[in-house]
Length: 91
Length: 247
Image 1 (cartoon, each protein chain N blue to C red):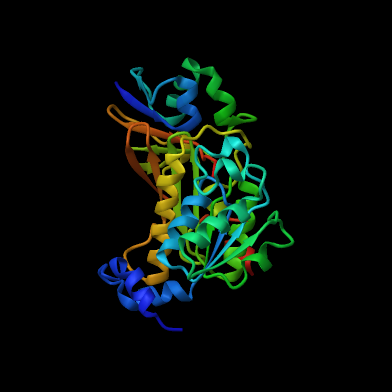
Image 2: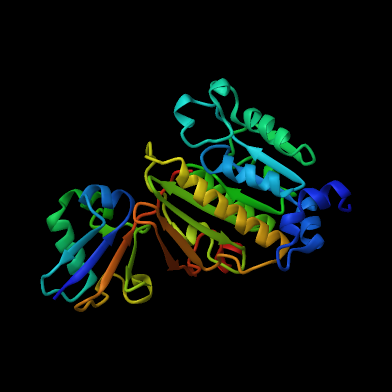
């Protein structure tokens, strides 16, 4: 199973690359995020606040926001592309 | 108000755009645009709105020019360091296009003045560098029922969407809580790209041409030269724009 995670802005800075390939057998977005934060623990304070995903984090599975598909319990499957966007504040 | 011979010649090349016509140019001449910020986004925004012939530009910014601004804030030069940004911007813009009116406001936008500052504007351009002020502008746009063109930048990335009260999600639907303030990295060309997209949106709305960037957010990734889109929807529980909040 292969899932591609594409990161933006400071998430990309923390990970050091645009994409992370995850090859473990995973069934939900939550498991993918867990796998990602397991590899890159420095992401945790940027994604979570008191154990909850920060409200401003946008996650898309194959271009569809998980807000419309059940949030972190949204299912994933082989070949999915997951994009993780933080808001940015500069002007 | 009518177009003069000077206007017809000065703006000839954009009047040629399909759907624009002299009517579109007259709409720009009659328009007032409020630009919140005269920094990285605000300076390209003000530049292209000025040369497009927007009749009245209101530019608000509290800060003075710092040397570290000059990699991106293209209306400010070395000789302007320590001057108020709005005065520096007004000087260049009025030389660029003497036929338009420019109102520089050296002011901190806050919850007390935001409604008065933006009253009478046809649209608001978000060229701020922080969410608390963006949220105030968002509320003012809803109160005045005028479009609000939101954008933000970081490094080689940018975000932009056009918010139209009653037709699109508002800023608080999209970003329900502010990310932390930071000294953000930024290449000067990034707000150049995003600021000119904001101007394109503003002129489309004022003239009625094209299809605005509504109900979707455009993400610019300059590092890989990609554009992405996120579909965005109103939050029925939004504390600012939901029916419950407005009643």
